[in-house]
Amino acid sequence: MEQLVNFIKMSSEQTVLTDSEIELVAHRFKILSEPSRLKILRSLFDGEKNVTEIIYNTGLLQANVSKQLSLLQKNGIVACRPDGLLRYYKLTDLTIIQICSAVCVRG
Image (cartoon, rainbow, N blue to C red; front, side):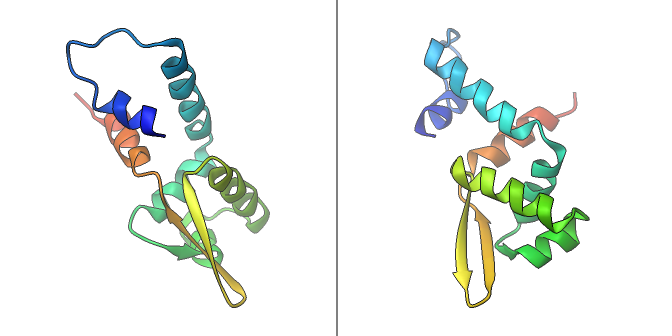
């Protein structure tokens, strides 16, 4: 993750990416290439939510939300906090917001 932060902050003089940086960027874009994961991340941009709230905000089915949250958690993009019977998720990799904003800039 630190490599990705450094990549985003890369100065204008540095234009050549190392092979490991290219792999990291490709992996992040692969994670972000699934629309349901992007909907879940959009739901979490403004703060922690439980699974029921994420389902309501995204319109996705519970099984899909659980599957995608698991993948996002495994890759360090979200974290889970159990609270009784509920599980709350929050965005932990804030570079994802920067990546999405950079990609969505319209010229």
